[in-house]
Image 1 (cartoon, rainbow, N blue to C red):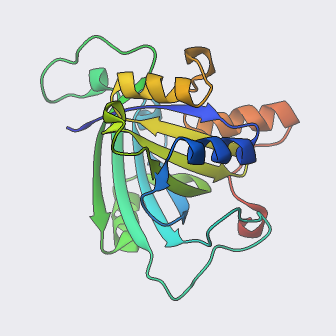
Image 2: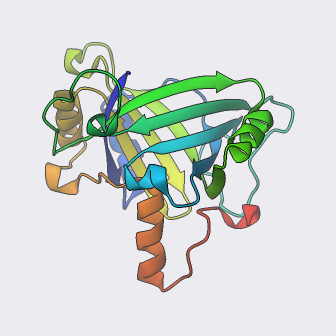
Length: 221
């Protein structure tokens, strides 16, 4: 299975961060999108207990620039794209060779992803197999890459995520490129966030003494 290595960074000042990103020569590699994600699991949380994730994602075009959380995602005229993703810690897989020693600084997952033609049908299949879609979360994402003359950044992807709980960046690629990019952006390993958005959302609910539900913008609730 393909292996994904990544970290998140919490961005306290999005405007300053985007200015720095531009100064480094980063360019968007795809249009800004709105993502709606639905996570599936067994009734007893069997996948989550093993650090695994099964998700259907719906991607729709979104306006460029900052989107107010009070506004709806754009453009009903564009056909959305549906993706099925399965992620697992390498040591939890029942197939394939033995996993290498874990990378404690970065989040490493085996990942399989495919484009769907009928997400609703697959959701009904999952439900028929006893799986349930139990957590929804959404965000706006813009993907960037650094300029080609930075050879160390050749395989690095920078995902800028606007979420209901704040702005984050995901750095995905080789470990050395993640560390170099983080330094260039003014961060150190102590700033690395390895939690997924579900755990970050639960942390945010706890901090605000809110009852957890789904991580959605106000217009979607």
